[in-house]
Image 1 (cartoon, rainbow, N blue to C red):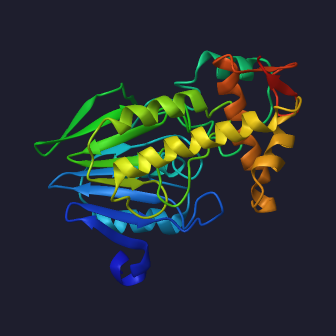
Image 2: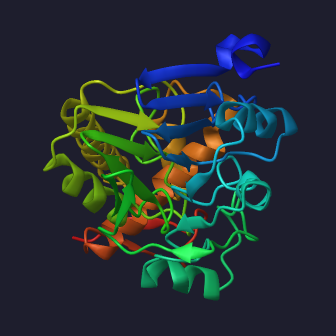
Image 3: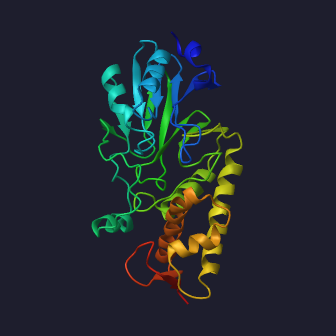
Length: 300
């Protein structure tokens, strides 16, 4: 039975050459599920195989239909994107291409956090992932006379890559329409994230195809919004500590006034990411080791 007949809601067509298969892994962090994309311009490439779920694996194989897949690309190695890659690679005899393993692309600050035993923010990391072929920034891959270009966009993870195909950007979890990207140290780095956003803001795309949620049809506006949103959050955080030192957790409750309780931990990670960025820029200082539980103060 074909994918179209088995579950029509799992398959969409962003354009005539691109199909999207929605994995059945909805959650507060993945929205409706992970998007797996297949480019078919006469040759095939798969982007983000997704979680290790048999139903999703079978849906991908149904759409491939026994044809040769030239590439399996990965935007980053979170467990909702990468675990199925190895099984799919073995079945299709197709190599996996990514920037590197989960520690790849991390800044010296984040590597130091890991080395010093920081034990938060490790949720969702696929520690077993490593690609067959590593990708470098701006590397191009030929697909039936067209090209897929890799753009290294660290921030959500150090090994995060977006893929450009014509005027479309497969934006992974870096830019989405339904929510702002999670930036959770030590594998997420806000300094890197903002630099990546500003770099993408200078480019012209007609559409973004994110790792979760619907296509983004106003790329430049969305990227500008995300940058401004982070700058507004930074202002709120600095205002929160004007009257005295606070921890990341205390700041979170002050600036996220309407958040669901289940998302407080994730919000605290985002605040902590902002604090590390502010400290690196000399705007604040940690009054002890880098941690959500360490108080910070303005660097007057």
